[in-house]
Amino acid sequence: ARAAAASAPIGPGVLADGTPIKLLANLGKPGEAADAVRLGAEGVGLFRTEFLFLDSADAPTVEEQTASYREVLAAFPGKRVVVRLLDAGADKPLAFLSPGEEENPALGRRGLRALRASESVLRDQLAALAAAADGTEAELWVMAPMVATVEETRFVSDAVHGVGIPVAGVMVEIPSVALIADRVLAHTDFASIGTNDLTQYTLAADRQLGSVAALQDPWHPAVLRLVSEVGAAGAALGKPVGVCGEAAADPLLAVVLAGLGVTSLSMSPTALADVRVSLARYTPDDAAAIARAALAAEEAADAREAARAAADTIT
Ligand code: PEP
Ligand code: MG
Image 1 (cartoon, rainbow, N blue to C red):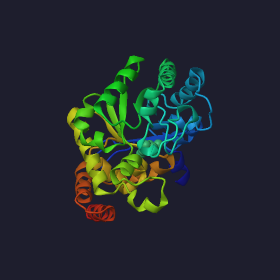
Image 2: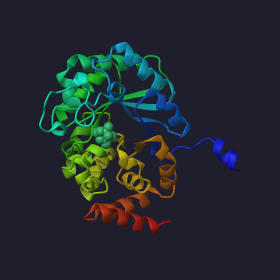
Image 3: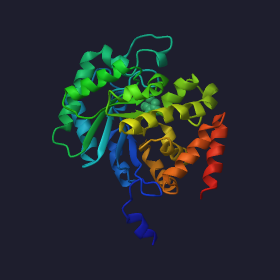
């Protein structure tokens, strides 16, 4: 029986009534794709392209990038692959996309801001993505990191659509875009919530600084309220909303996120199995009730406990 279970195909992510919650993989290198497939990823929710070039002194060529993107797309025929434009700066410095000395790099010219300041890097990456999309059987979605405004959202949509890639999105990592998610989503095809940065910027606690690590908790009801704004806007406008931060890998928080309107969860592939089992225990109404319990809490720890207690009354 054990051998049969091991070789049985892994089903998609679903709530107890069959409502799909797509379970996707976070990747940093094409070489990680095979494991993601083996562990049942239904696609890629976050390909962190900057990880390819952390050691590069010079900007990568279009050909070099196209080859890497093709490799990932080839592993997911018929599946969604969300590629993030280079997210340079702060915790992920790239030599060829550096803003120079800044006192507060996490609040500086990072992510999309850095790309807009280096037009040729952005142009080359989009050209490489468009080339990789040509002939692939995967469904390429492209999104930008560290988007703060509607103007930036429109810029990203125009830039991505402009090279012939039909699906463009923004990451929700800055509270400003979560708070006006209705207006942001009107100008983009999808949103993906990066809870690592969203938590950092909501609690004003450096995600790399151990002394404030206790504040870096995506269970904080302020973070959950922002997620609920985005989930509600996505549902109202019919635009997919995913989560691709560490929060998606927490089996109970994954249920809360589903209850807040999130329709896909992307995580490190090793986390997929536990999240899949957890989601399948609850109906959409259960998930909404568990989410309401967490949202009503005052502290992150209380939110976790309230969600646990609400979940325990159901299963
Ligand atoms: C995030 O911020 O949650 C995210 C997914 O992006 P990264 O961790 O690469 O900054
Ligand atoms: Mg981020």
